[in-house]
Each structure stands twice: as C-alpha cells, then as structure tokens.
Length: 269
Image 1 (cartoon, rainbow, N blue to C red):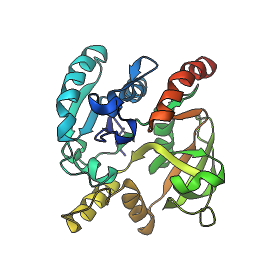
Image 2: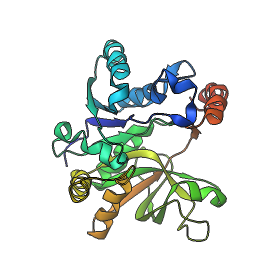
Image 3: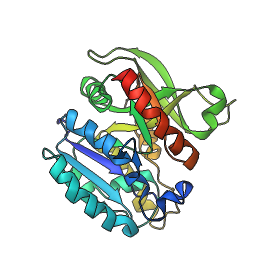
Image 4: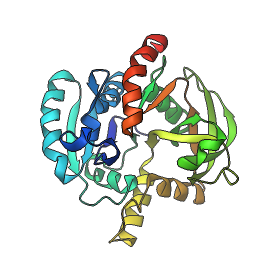
C-alpha cells in the first residue's frame, strides 16, 4: 500500500463549549502553552514525514484559517497546506469527504486537535508504523476508568502483539461502540482522535453520505466507515499510546491544560 503522506485535520468546530474564548478566535487556533492547538498536530506531521496537511473548516471560520495558513507556510516549509470547506456539520466522517479530491484514493492520516497528546515517542509516527506493518486502518487508543466510558467511542479488541519501534500495546479492533453504558461497554479502551485510514474507509463514508443527502448534524461519524470495514471482513488495529492526553474541549479543561501541559512536556520530552 502507498506510503502515507497526507494528514487531514478536521477543524470545523465552532467551539461553543469554549465561549467566550471562541467568540473571535476559532477553537483550534486558541493557544495552549504558547501555540495554537492545531499546531501540535502540525508539528507531529513534520516529524512523521507528512507532506500535505488538509484543514477542513466551516465557512464562517475560513478567513481565520486562511490567515493562519499564510503564517504556517513560512514556519513549516516542508509542508503543503490545503483548506477545504465542510458546508454542513454532518459529522467528522462527513468532514473527511471534503478532502476526497486531495486524498485521491490513497491511505491518509487524521488527527483531531481538541486533545493535546504528550509522549516521549512520536505519536503520529508510531501510528504510521502500525499501519505500515498491518496494511490496515489503525487508531489511537487510551485506557480510562470504566466509569467514564459513556462519554467516548469504545473499542472491542483482542490482543495482537508489538510493532518494532512502537512503545505500548497493539490490538486488533473487533468493534467500535459510540458512548455505551458502563454495563454494555466492551472494554475501557477509547478512541482518542487519531487515525490512519485506508482508502476504503473514505469510500464507505462517501457511499453513506450519498444515501443520506440531507444528513442531520453529526449523522456521519468516522466510526460508521470503520464499522463497514469490520462488517465486510477487513481488519482494524489500535495502538494504546504511552503518554498523557489533555482534553481541551471545554473551558475548564482548556484552562487546566494551560497549567499542566508545560509540566508534562518536561517530564515526557
């Protein structure tokens, strides 16, 4: 399978839970520890051999990202930046469809910027190694207290083994359940907003979108495309990364992250 050189960053969210900070600044351009949230993923991209970064935005914040990309091109000269507009908020899977013309049937990486992940290993680079070994879609996983699983996408897994150069456990994913009750959760391993996806996942999402031309908000998540992969007999893998995740999706958590990220970066890096 072709080498992964493209990273999609779905950054179309309005950031309502981060008001009033997002009144003038889009959520993913808010600065944490001195740099915009989106830049943590972009730095991973540079270190992981990515060549193209595709930002999926909504129409109301496009001008802010146009201005950001002008600055980012000077800072990250090895990257080519592209902006695509998601006209309707039909879900994070629907957002990926906006980049289909640039992905062109190739495998690609996806990172969500609400979470800042701190590790002494290269996170995106490690996930790419998992993908390269198994030639199948791969996702970032984190183990959390089971009492919290109702707020996340939770995976069912079976133990797989190890990948050379990758710290942490590798699993074969056998199912994905969105926000299950504690009793129905298949594990306490959650998806934490990072993927490397095969072209078939995007094709799955496009077919679903074509069957739902007037999809409601958040109707087409990435997990729909992954579930179709599993139903059709394809394999998916997950890497339980070693490090710390900082959720910056609410005002309280964002403010807490401002204090803690610098401390943990010194510890891990």
